[in-house]
Image (cartoon, rainbow, N blue to C red; front, side, top):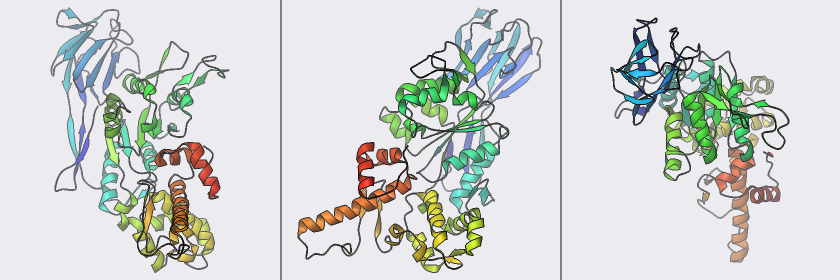
Length: 464
């Protein structure tokens, strides 16, 4: 059921609004039976995988469903043999009010909303699965994760690149009842647009050129487990209704098939876009946004949690423990610590991890020193860094060392632009972990143009 998280003004407590429904059997073979369901679509029938399973022989396998939406709650008959009734009237679709009695076959049920508001205080723990953080920002995140991990609620994780959105999906999966089942990861931003539908929903043999055999999609592959859809904001608009149907109906239809397949999957989605803005611009469906943002959880960027730098560095060094121990590296020297706390970290924790891993082979003592850091990071001392997100430099102080005010204006300008271009691309490609497709989207360039510039400046990248 739909859930919204928010921060109460003047406190460190978040509220989680969980929309549930209670169905009670008042007459029939299942009399006195009660079901408390936290789904937006509640299936009623004789099938064992229904949300409300009834043993009455007059109840069809998939008899009816209750759908809770923004406009109200609808009871819908699913083509049952013996019908769905409100009072003496057989209905195909009708709005339900709290306390409404209705019959499916000869079984009478009563519907009651059973919403709940839970206050979530910051966690007392400084870690959650593979994530660490002692500051308030991350302990608030851990507090929410502790409450929602055991549920099947759909979660939308937002935040900048490198903040740990995939880590959150793995943590939620590992702490859920689905932990023994698969966790499948799909990146909408990295997949070729023409293959997204086949990847998610599967295809039948001969459905399109090259489909030489039938293949299950990732929804089916994740059966009983969790499907993590990364960069969901990049999902093509024409495929969004199909994802909405999969979330609402818990069934998928392969390309080239007329048969729907039931799926039991918890969906966790992530994006670094503002989906409310995407909805307003017409690039993302509003109904899909509300369906995936049952719980919307924002991960803070590293610049908003600088107090966590110490615990993060210790954690990342321990993660690289074997190599760090062989070099005798235990921490940062004072200059590096000061640099890390002043740096803007456009790539967030991922960039911090990359910097530490790259520095370890160049350490000659127990601490990471400035000499071990990448040149681009050392150059950031005393200057405001280039921000790939905004695409604009913020220079402070003198001209770059290679530029003299004795040079002709055109030559000086060309050299400054060249230096900026190289620095911008280095930061951009590192921010996106070498992924050219993602870097091109952020830069507002086509893939061929950014690839040409990367080759020009001899910057390494991944072919994705």
